[in-house]
Length: 384
Image 1 (cartoon, rainbow, N blue to C red):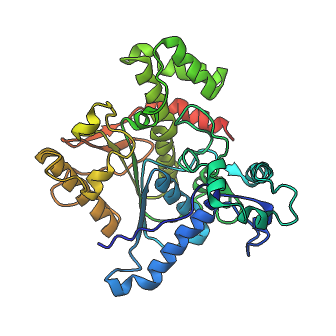
Image 2 (image 1 turned 120 degrees about the horizontal axis):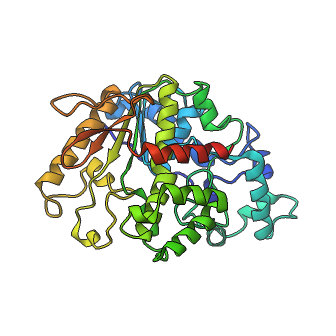
Image 3 (image 1 turned 90 degrees about the vertical axis):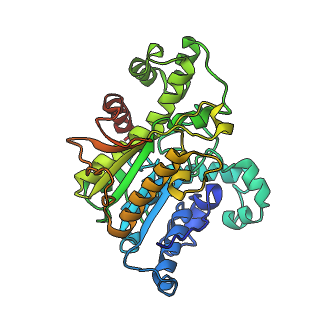
């Protein structure tokens, strides 16, 4: 297969919705410039991939983290239809709440004011005259687009600016969950999943909670008193080795594991062929094991690309990498990851909630964290 990668605008450069910018657009909207960058890449593939030996009629888009959110956005974006025949998202869905256009524009007005451009006769021109370094210092990319819709589950705080995809009425016509529920999505196979310990990575540079009281305080700061009480009941400290472990599980499940499951359920209900996975192999790299990250966010990437060699990992991990590459490759080629003598990957449905579990020994798992995900789904519902 051929793999095409590209950069796209992020943060304030890629997801800035302002009336002055919208006025310059043929569609009269702004806020999803980064998504349109990606669509342009897919259009380039349609026009140019054949001379490289590629098939423009057999394109799979895939991404991890923010890239997985973006894959999901293209699933619901009518303008991206026909540019791809398969979708694959690693650690990211998109069926929790996105900012509305009015919310995003209100935020953009405040940002413009902070940059000294609020009263300018041409706000867009004024902002473009601000040095890029100043824009990024005021609106850092970190903690912006990667944050899941509906809040900053990752760090336990709220970034000053939330520049991320927006329901603009055109590029993303409505809340993605509504478009999935209405069946207004790309009719292509969809493979997606998450990792067992998604949350550990996002707490590496955060202050650790050491007592149950600190844990409960952290939940309340993040979710408010009512939701925090529900989360604390679902994740009691006594179920974990430490309060910090409980908080990291909350971060991973609420931000990624259960939101991915929510998207998978809605995609399956829309009639798509859905294949769900869990990656469960703790990072085997000695230099990172001291951080006790487990199967953290992004841990699967090296296995998918085979980018860690035998000088670092042993034969069992190399075999797992080769196995994952076969599944990923077959999905890209045919829309079905199954084949050869590999363990059968069951198609996902909300009724049986089956997924493939990737560890040194592969297995199928049913109802993975379904009890706590039911709570998170009720929280997601409350955002609308």
